[in-house]
Length: 244
Image 1 (cartoon, rainbow, N blue to C red):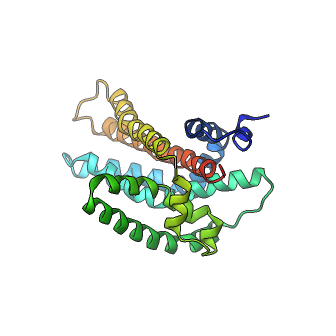
Image 2 (image 1 turned 30 degrees about the vertical axis):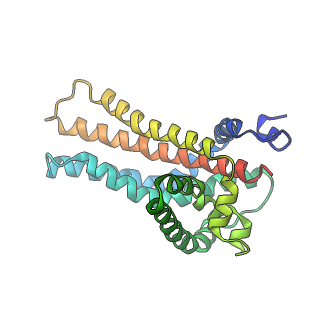
């Protein structure tokens, strides 16, 4: 029997859940990448390349890190919906279960997600003001909020509030949530920098073309790194949600 099925029958272990999420993502990752590229990447990545080259040639000296941050923030607005949807579609298709179209998925979830995110932010701020530690705990309890809005049928049918469902999903597994987020924080912090360093070995600041190419390739890496993270986190959410 595949390891991906064993967690349904064995006693739940939050540390094994992290490994399980990465294992599950391994099967769906290429399919998710392909779908993401066709629906969004073929437009977004060439646009990012044009922006990097334009900034380097037209605005020499402008901090390129600002450009990367702006591109990433704007890109996340799309991939935060697209990647979990494609990962979910992969999971359901394997089970032979039909899935709503992305347009229907987006229409049903975008407004509830906005309102739930605002409410969660206010709740977290309130706890942070009272005392720092309760605020951090509340942040962790609500860290899978958007997956809850996307995929919890009780939330989709308004039988349970998103915040209640999110806290139910993360109850008793806060340490594993800290670990999996720390893994991705470290990956996103160091791997792109390492790649850019390798691509710019021997390249001077005056070589605008090679610097632009290095920034473009690094950003493409970041783009798919975000997709990898959201894919793993989608599987992680389902493992936590289904553990009972």
